[in-house]
Amino acid sequence: MFPFFYDPTYILIIPALILALYAQFKVQSTFEKYLRVRASSNLTGAQVARELLDKNQLYDVPVEITPGRLSDHYDPRRRILRLSPDVYHGRSLAALGVAAHETGHAIQHANEYIPLNIRNAVFPVASFGSSLAFPLFFIGLLMGRGGVFLMDLGIILFSAAVLFQVFTLPVEFNASSRALHMLEGGGYLSRGAEVSGARKVLSAAALTYLAATAMAVLQLLRLLLLRGSRRD
Image 1 (cartoon, rainbow, N blue to C red):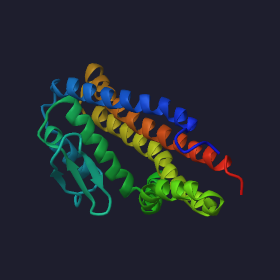
Image 2: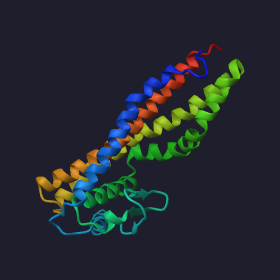
Image 3: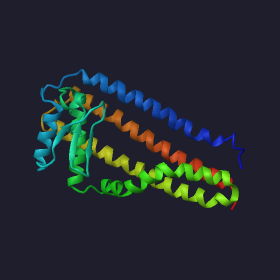
Image 4: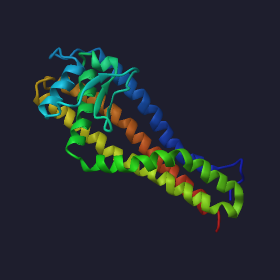
């Protein structure tokens, strides 16, 4: 077992941490860049989201404004699409890309997209597990052999959080693919530079989910290595 003050397994998460920092920089800088590029359709993010929802017979899903920046999301429990002020009122490539992406989530929900259903099913356990996994694991680590059960329980709970992150990837990638298809096919963005700009915004956002998944997987590997250093 490693001494309490020395844990070489921290090295494992350094690559994921670097990726996470880069992803945050990339999404912020890309969003800022294309927030200043106006779409030729001259529609706002809210207008595009409303039209796309109606085209998919989702008339009962409201589009609301929510405080904050990059706080855009679709709430599957209340079936509400919420857009940040920059996206709700914006007429930029970034605004339309993000609005269409969140609309993609609403369409996934309506169509019972399997990865989304799995992610939603795992969410309660993942949310509970992510908050308790590390305290339980490290209490067990400090207790010695008597704490093996707590360590194993922590690993099981954190595994649910990792599973949630893994299923987040296809959900997000699919929503972005739907968004670009709807924006181009519906004439909201012209082919070429406008579609390319929206794609760059959504690709930068996807990088943050990839970084989160990498961090979760490496953290789980770290816990397994620490657990392996403790004999039952």
